[in-house]
Image (cartoon, rainbow, N blue to C red; front, side, top):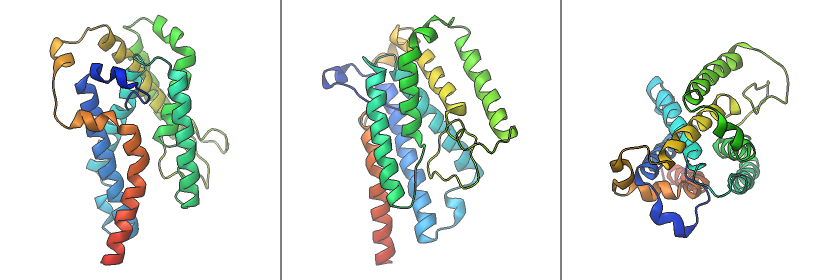
Length: 240
């Protein structure tokens, strides 16, 4: 995701490739959610929303989105501040979606807010982890956490934030800490090398049309897109 809280005076220093990737991920997210609305409210065939190809792409671009938020954590003046603000926005979304009977209990914004708060408190520890070990640790943790969530069963009602849900748990957008927090941490590792100018010069100087603009406002697009899509879907339903 974007560096959620970016001051205007720093916008000229943004790296367009990062914003472009974020913008592409946002566009695909909006399309994915629109496909869901078409299936759920207009009776479109279910494969339009869920099929092996779309499901795989969903996880790939979600991973890109989350890791980019980790990248941006290297450039933030206060991950605690932006994490808190993002958490407040996420809770407002929860309130609105509960009223709409489409609850988002722990969606991607909830995940990112917790990751940013966590990193804001623990970043000095992660900065001391040897850079060669960090990606190995993150990928191993992803594999282990996925395995544990799938194979260890529990009836606990307090572990849903980590990925262990219970009968009756519903969240229309759900990104638990396991394994996604490790994708975020992997992004912080990548961000270190970007910040230290370890990438090729073209990475920093490349100019890309349109997508960086979209990526620069990804938080607000995320907040606004679903109500807009819902309104469009209902309008189509009325007219057709």
